[in-house]
Every structure is written in structure tokens, then in C-alpha cells.
Length: 193
Ligand code: GRF
Image (tube, rainbow, N blue to C red; front, side, top):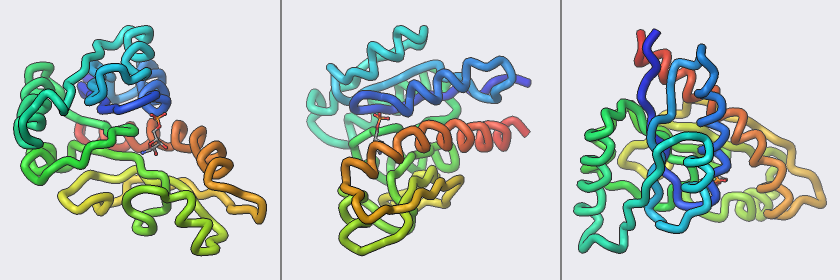
């Protein structure tokens, strides 16, 4: 079966992008990562992508006079590369309805909480402040509502009495890296069929 051409959008270290890329290098995986784009030109993830043999480039949002013009450049770059599916992975720009609607059901994100809990930032601290027993991560479709699209997969972890925001982030990250490829596989298979 043909692999679905997939791009990953990042802003930083790109560990989830690396996990997606490595999983997709398996010959039986239904997607391939063919492009990595960062809105931050010196994001560490760009070099990691190149070292895995993936084309990686920056589209610096600060170089554009408006969010719309930045998103138009992003969209054009994805289309030029014949991308069919886009994974946000630590991509720290909110995408407007203009962009999101053009990638309906083709745009995924990983969020470090058990959505619908704790949309937005500082999710680990907010889970601790609420006295929750459980925390986790969610891969979801991106819609115009921030962190509000349909869930594809979630992974739960326990919260212990001595946990801090840092310890939760540390324990959750490897699980994010395992659940995101599973979610990508599920969506790519849906597109293939
Ligand atoms: C992850 O915790 C992800 O859930 C959040 O940002 C972090 C990105 O980490 N949205 P990385 O760049 O993939 O290492």
C-alpha cells in the first residue's frame, strides 16, 4: 500500500517528531515523514530531522506581517511537497480556522493532558493543582477550537504524592512518543482505505 505523505510541524527539540519519523521508517508503516517544518529557525529538531534523512526547513513566523500570511506560506509549502497529512508535535503556534479548515481530518496534535481536561498551557501543574489522581496525553484532530478536536488516542499515567510538573513531564514524554506513532498509523490507514 502507498505510504501517506506526512509532514511534522515543530517549534523545539522535536522528540515526538523523531519518534514519528523512526516509526514511519518501518516498511509496513502506512505513513512516511517526508517534511519537517519549524516556525523557530534554530529549533534543535531541525538538525535531528536532517540526521534521519528527512527534509527539514524553517518558516519563521516573525518574518511575516500577519498570522494569515505565515499560514499561507506554510500551507503553500505543504502543498508544494504534496503533503497529505500534518502532525503538530510541540508546535507552539495557534492555527487559525483558515488553515485548520484546509486540513480538516488531516491535521493532528499531541497535547500533554487527558483532554478535554486542561486545554492550553501548563497542563502538568494544573493537574497537580486540581489534586487529580490521573494525568496523560491525547492525540487529537486539530479543529478551530484550541485543543478541542476529536480524540484519536489517549495514554494515562498515575499521579503520585511526590510528583511535580517536571516529574510528570519526564514520565509522560516517552508515552507521548509511543502513542503518537500509533495514532498516526490509525489515521494514515483510514486515509489509505
Ligand atoms: C510535548 O510534551 C508535547 O505534548 C507538547 O510539547 C512537547 C513537545 O516535545 N505539546 P518535543 O518537541 O516533541 O520533544
